[in-house]
Image (cartoon, rainbow, N blue to C red; front, side):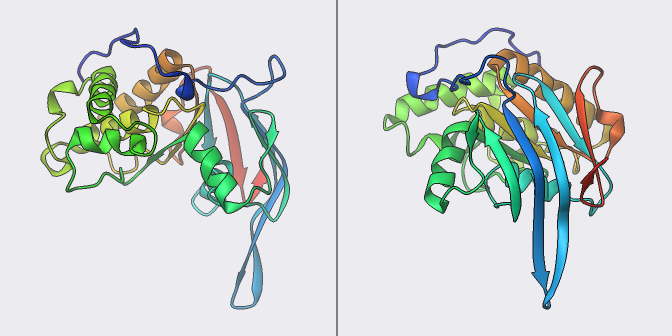
Length: 247
C-alpha cells in the first residue's frame, strides 16, 4: 500500500464542514430499542427485535455477529436507507427515526458516506470521476471537482490512478477508491458494510487500517459491519448482534 499523507492538503468548503453536536460529548449516533419487522408471505419476521447502542464521535465502531443476525438491517437504518418499525434513532443529536424520504435523502447526502463490500464503482467512469460523482449536485465547477478527487485519492495513496477505470485496478485499490469517494463530501459518519468481504486477508487488514487512519485524519466517525472478528482493532468499540438483539 502506498504511504498515506497524515495532513490534509486543503481546507474544505464551509458547506462540507461536519455539524457540531449540540451537546458536548454526545455520541455521533445513538439508537434505542430499535425493532425492524418485515412481512414475508403474510408472516411477520423480526430482523431486529431490540437493539440499543451508540457510536462515539471520531471513533471506529465494529458491528459484529453471524450472518442473518441483523447487522446489515441496522446499518440500513443507521444510514437512513430504511426506517425502524419502532424505536428511536438520533444522528448528530437529531431525531431521524421518521424523516420523509426527501428529508432522509438530504440528511444522508450531507452527513453520511457509504462503503460497500462490492465497491459499487461505476465501471464506465474513471477512478477520478467515481470520486467526483457525489459532488455533482454540490460543486458546479468541473475543475474544482477534479481537484477534490485528486486530493482525496492522494490521501488514500492512489493519485497516480486517477485516469484508470475500475476494471483496470485491483480489488484493494477499488476499495480505496470507494473510501475516497465516501470521504469527498466530508461526512460526519462513514458506514462500511462488510468492506473487506471480497478481499484477501492481507488486503483486508490494510483496508481496516486505512479506514482507522481516515477516521483520525478527517475527524469522522466510522462504523464497520463485519462477521470477521479478527479484523477488530485494539481499543475499538464493538456492538455484537445475535438474532436481532444486542448481545
